[in-house]
Image 1 (cartoon, rainbow, N blue to C red):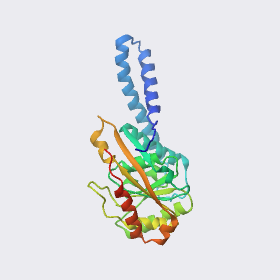
Image 2: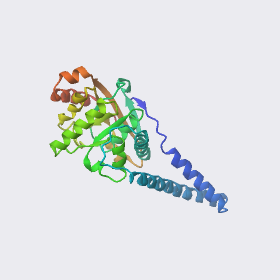
Image 3: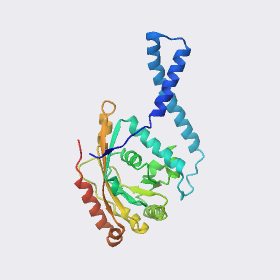
Image 4: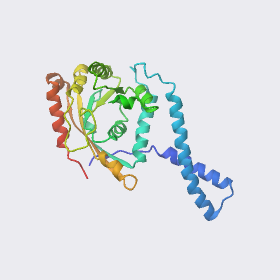
Length: 276
């Protein structure tokens, strides 16, 4: 079943909303049943106010970020803030994350490859790896989002344009440099896009060139359950399972073609059965 990952990210908002509702409710002279009713309404208003202030702060910070400047160093503030937001999203959608195989993770930087059944996969994986320096390779459209894109950029995430071979190669080289120089581990989805069906889409094996150029191990991960989050929310929590199945060591990476590495990774992912 795996170890359940604790998620405390909603606590600051709940504490703010509770203090806001209690202070405002008592200051207006409400007592008894009237106070109880007002506290509920003010608590919800406090949650909305706290979220609005938080988003405003993120937006103001994002305005100062130059996304045209390559990010070659690890910056703890942006990495931890991005991790916090991913955890906040998981908590808000009542996602219960169970992780297995974490003991297999190498001590140094690595390339992570994972299946991609849902848009929640990056959120779950980033939160599960919150104790590591970790960045993702995403679509250019994600990196172009306001607030989100600038923070991802400063957290060493990279956009990859799969329709432009030269741009894609530049991303591969940049990702390899980040791993090789010990800045961050990098995660990528070799299917290239979300898989809305059974099994796995054909792999874009060029993803494994990152590990070969970085002379780094490949961590193969399989995620299940994220495709059910939207269907269950808000009535039921969703249990999501992230399994770090296998590590392909540097000798295997160096001695195999990208197609062979893709087949090894695919076999590991397919061996993990969805858990209901």
